[in-house]
Length: 258
Ligand SMILES: C[S@@+](CC[C@H](N)C(=O)[O-])C[C@H]1O[C@@H](n2cnc3c(N)ncnc32)[C@H](O)[C@@H]1O
Ligand code: SF4
Image 1 (cartoon, rainbow, N blue to C red):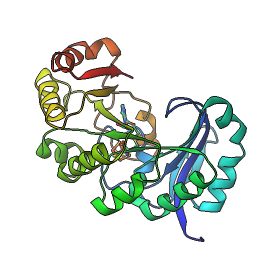
Image 2 (cartoon, helix red, strand yellow):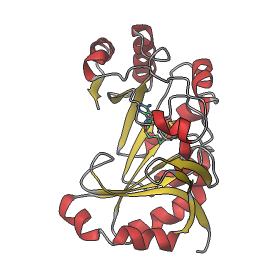
Image 3 (cartoon, rainbow, N blue to C red):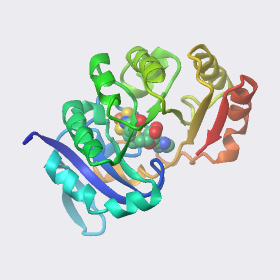
Image 4 (cartoon, rainbow, N blue to C red):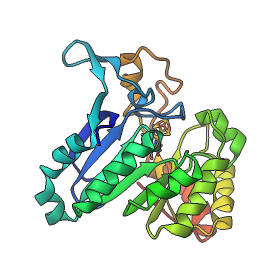
């Protein structure tokens, strides 16, 4: 297959994006615009210039790669996956924005016996999403807001399609981890915790992971010459989410803060 996808990073020896030692493939392009996104350089689907503060000059982020090129890169670390129970995680950006390519890549990786995971927010046509998840061993599925209008306020899109795909994932896939990024002034109140808990109870979800807001992306907005709404807003820590966690636990939803 000679089709290419725009990729902005291939991160080796990652230990935070699924089991074992992993290679994370970061797809460039996302149909959402979460204003807290720590990977703003992932949002445009094409290569773009960004200030490189080490080289003190603009560099291009994003490169078109074929499935064969990515598989060759991934296979260099095969012994580490085998030893550690690791594999490959597709992230981004939103991998489903280049779904056809991602499915081809996943098929090749599975043929070679590589464990496959993804980080997604599930915003894609249902048929595409259902085909995509057939080729994954593990799905990290983000839900940014329980209320569709608030979801649109924060990300630019409503949540109905996302929640439909989450339902499909939960009924068709054995290994789905539901995650919620907790963002100050957006979805971090106890009212919000109750809203999420009700949604998850209604969907039969019994455990979730909470991701406290971090500022790993802060500088990148200025390197891209873009405004950043959350400039200087303090990061959240595990203990800041205690109340949120208690609401989940009292709704019998197991809850881990990452
Ligand atoms: C950059 S996203 C890419 C995958 C996919 N587009 C998504 O949103 O799930 C990877 C993970 O980073 C999280 N994330 C992004 N910005 C964050 C921030 N400022 N603080 C905490 N988590 C953040 C997302 O919620 C998601 O779980
Ligand atoms: S969906 Fe993920 S990649 Fe896209 S803007 Fe939101 S956090 Fe960033």
